[in-house]
Image 1 (cartoon, rainbow, N blue to C red):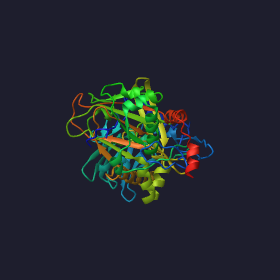
Image 2: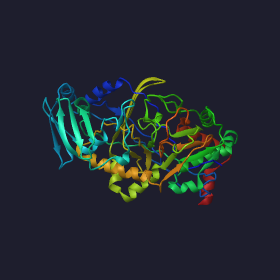
Image 3: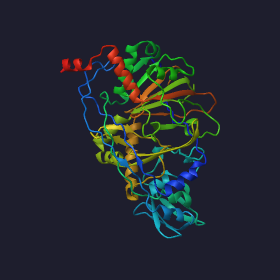
Image 4: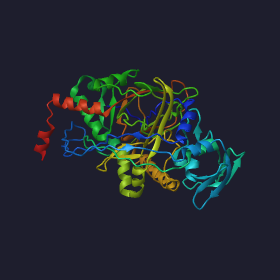
Length: 482
């Protein structure tokens, strides 16, 4: 049994340094065309109806043709914008009827910026953590109807906006110019398959999918049961691991091998001085999925609690993005369409174990495959870029849809809240499950978390090998059931 007293999150550690200036210049000059395809998931058909916590077998029947699309995101007027960057702002106009701020450049030309986007991207210390270049204000505090009380040009090189709630924001011309709104391409994903997922809400807490660390390490049947539960529910709590470093590596290598990222093979999350990432702060970590800027994003995540904060706070939050997406599609179809069709920029930049890196990827917040099934959720407030290549008039509707989706994700009816105890390991589908953490009082060594990733390809491969080894004949069982 797992001891749970009532999220855990691990936003990826990031360090950002001087590449930022180069990145802005590169993006302003026009985006580089990129080719990419996703590996979406197509649910297997004909799942055998056995108890949810038992070993489940299935037969994959999904068929479809692979679809590849060269995805290009081309900047327009790049050279003109680069020349204008040396100039400044000639005038600013508040257009309340359109909820836009209009800027006139000293070299000629104008750009408009939606109020909601400006408020979301305020660069002040209360809203933005400069050390990690991450947005830190809470989504629930974002006012979709925010509008300026006044706006003025400061020396031709910045705009100061005083909002209706009294908050003051300053935006530099050199920051605004490369972020001017432009159109972008849509995306097509390519299909695949997996065991039929079972969406869930907070009722899952009553019968949490569980596994034993010692049994998984020694018993192939226990490992098979874990892999099948993980594929169906997207979340399994593992108990009984030693409360010491190195255990996630042991478990991951029992399954296959660790997926290495630009942060290395495994990672540690503790409070640090002058952190380069909001994960190292003791404040709340909002619901998110890790590494949204990876085209081939690690599929399975492991989070091991080695030491837990003993006071109030540091609680884990876990929610099923598939369940929330289904609710959005059923109750807000237009907002679902917006989040599945609008490309969003995700990024990470800095220097770590492998040296300097700059990851940029454009994908919708909710990705669907060629069958229309949800295959990947991209959601990370710190790692959603301020570059947004869509028409300015479409921005407000996107934010409205995003806020609605977030409310569904965070709704207590859909989100699990618990406090991990030392020796427990959360294992979950990073393409589907979002996780977070409540704030706790600062203190060195007050909380110690270790984590790593394994690709879904390897987990599914291990399941197939174990099914064959243990004599699980899915096709025979399904035919018998039918």
